[in-house]
Length: 237
Image 1 (cartoon, rainbow, N blue to C red):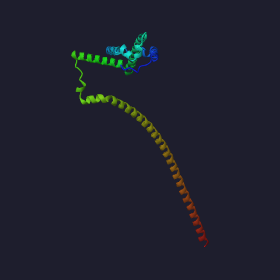
Image 2 (image 1 turned 45 degrees about the vertical axis):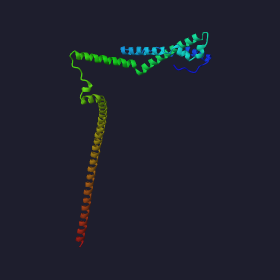
Image 3 (image 1 turned 180 degrees about the vertical axis):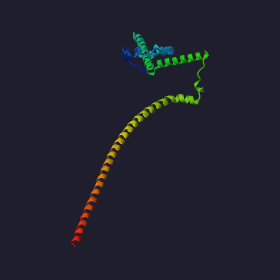
Image 4 (image 1 turned 120 degrees about the vertical axis):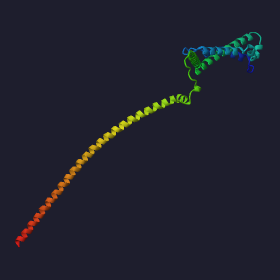
């Protein structure tokens, strides 16, 4: 493993203290809300643990001590402290890797997806068993006609579009009904206005007719007066 530049003994001691007091929140256990892993998820978790353990086992004390040659070469209890520091480092690194792995499993829904795969395979095995028992096996997707595949692919979108169109149609129908009621009300109002105008026209026709009749009577009266005057003049002759 690559090593940093050699450090002084006080820096090594500070690093050892920091590693010993590292926050243990990274190794927090999984929450109780995590789904129960199935066989495949359990095997996957075990494989991850085995791979992590094998990787950490390669971080040997000799490689770790090569990063701190001054401390490793010192006499007395320096080697014991360095070995303790190596153990803390490996343990903390393993706890951090486990915590990060659990977080990735939760974010990527690894257990849920593996459980879903397990259920899918179980369903496939059940279908295969029914087919072997004498039932007609389902037609593979690649053998279905193009119209069936197209209908199955477009059916969800068509159903959604149909629902939206039905909602728009209902809205338009309600608006048309409201407009029709408004138009009928306006027609009734126009019929009322036309009937009133016709009454006014009849009244005007009657008034005009009465006016004409009054003018004819006045003209006859003037004519009679003129005739009387003419008879008087003739009698005076």
